[in-house]
Image (cartoon, rainbow, N blue to C red; front, side, top):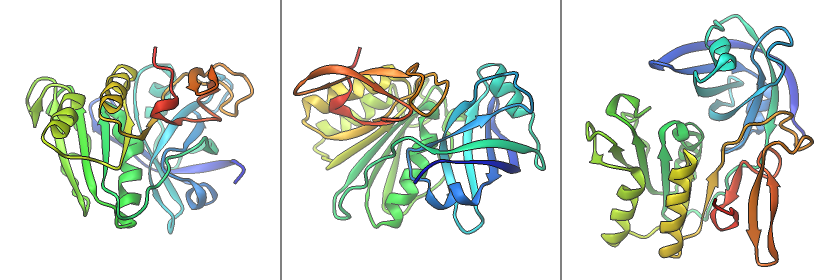
Amino acid sequence: MPPVLCKAPVVQQAAVVPGVYRLAFTAPEIARTVQPGQFVHLRVGSTHDPLLRRPFGVHDVDRECGTVSILFQVVGRGTAILAEVRPGGVLDVLGPLGRGFTLPAPALPVALVAGGLGIAPLAFLLRRLAAAGIKGSLFQGARTAGLLLGAEETVPGFKRRLATDDGTAGHRGSVVDLFTASLVAGYRYAYVYAAGPYPMLRALATRMREYRLEGEVSLEERMACGLGACLCCSTGVQSDSGTGYARVCADGPVFPVREVAWS
């Protein structure tokens, strides 16, 4: 489906932890077609300053009410402006954009591995998998317990396993180490989905290669157009025919793990 450009009224804006916000807006055409892993491109102000839109993975959708939710962290001027938007405000939204996750056959157990704010796109995928009767495990990591977003949420068919760098919740250490420990214990997964910081994804890709696991990762890159025209979000990819570049916005942001040329 082609992306939709619309004016979207904000219906909810709330801080879920210090510096991280959950924002919901009404955009029925986007809510009806968006798939887990796809993103929306938002103009964060009412003027041309900041000029560029910001990309945000879709965190949740209410197709009946026509609302779309995102999670975002204030990391710069654009997200700081977005954090000031209140219900009743109107956003300029383009979406859905990009390629989302591939859903497996219903009988196959899967693993989801989320680092930090990587839980944002994976939470949408998790609900979709559970609705399709797919079971598995969610491995979720953060620096400390207070940053484990949605850790209290239960999803039918999925066991949530937690890791924190400081040991305040779950396994003390990285979420990749926690996932690797499950493999060592004999757990196997037909497919692995992951999102989070690049070093985490790279480490996970190494483990998946060692255990011959297939899966997909959602990459994050700075974007300008969001439509594949400017090429500023290009990333290295590889195949049997050699190496090259792909656009994270248009060819991703979801890529098969084995196709990413990890640097």
